[in-house]
Length: 246
Image (cartoon, rainbow, N blue to C red; front, side, top):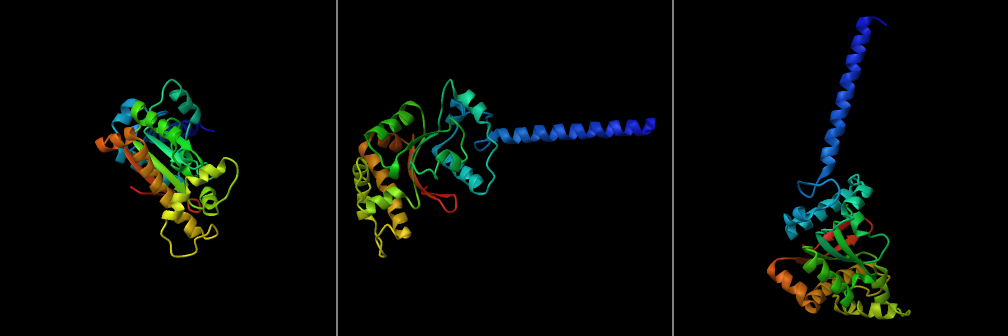
């Protein structure tokens, strides 16, 4: 190899290294920018949350679900998030969702550790304990959105339609049965008709929201003042898409 050739090769290697370094730095910067322009590398801070309105938060959830169902989720460093949130948490929302293994809210909304509180119970129904948790999340911890999320092909909904009975499950399903009765549907009203099941699931979300407002003066008052927004959503198992009510 000539001296001139060796010099050219070193120059090429240096340019390649600098180009690669710039690309990596750019990607890291892009990865850190989330929350509609708010940059945070690991966990949501109180100051960042305070800049968000309830509608901002719902928009972030919608964008996160769009990333999820398009296969473009963020590259999460969960260990860094765990470490950053270990000394304190500042979640922006509280969710009430079903225990169904196919509908993990944090995953399908592409959220981080520390972004939301998530209460999970079969059929996403509210009870005094869950309401107490929501009051803690909003009144004491500063969450600004209460989202009740049902999903398609829900087993708890099917059980309520079929009047299933099994230990403590019997009492849980009894809380869903008002949604079965309140669902206007002209076709076959059975658990084998998935369109009816999904219609009941949607009605169940609406009734749960109404019960939250009725049974928690604390949360109803916060909603009236604009401090929080209470709304619902339905997750479609087949498509990965969340249908937000607001």
